Amino acid sequence: KYRADGTLVGLAYDGKIWLLRDTNGDGIEDQADLFWDNASALQSPIGMDVTPPGYPRGNGVFVNGKSRCVLILDKDGDDKADVRRIILHGFGTEDSHHSIHTHQWGPDGALYILGDMGASWGVFRIGRP
Image (cartoon, rainbow, N blue to C red; front, side):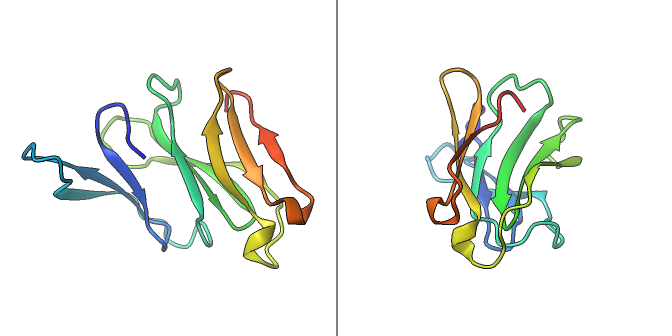
């Protein structure tokens, strides 16, 4: 997903988060900088969303993985993650279908997260995390 400044935020299968930039104006990202080195803190990342412009806690990314949703923030503006905060936890780990996965910012400013219906979950409204 793209941030307001045009930086593409990419989530890798290993949980690392990369900031991809087009440095020569040709419309293709040609620079990759590591935003967050997962270091086994999040298993099986499956979904993410960037914080909205002007987010009061800083630039960051919400990431869903097995059993939890975390907010990863850059507090000092250097485009490196400084804080990892668990937002939701306790979801099933038996199967990838028992986890939470999709994020969407609603028109009300709340973050909505979808959990698998097969695991008897549904849509979670976080409010303004």
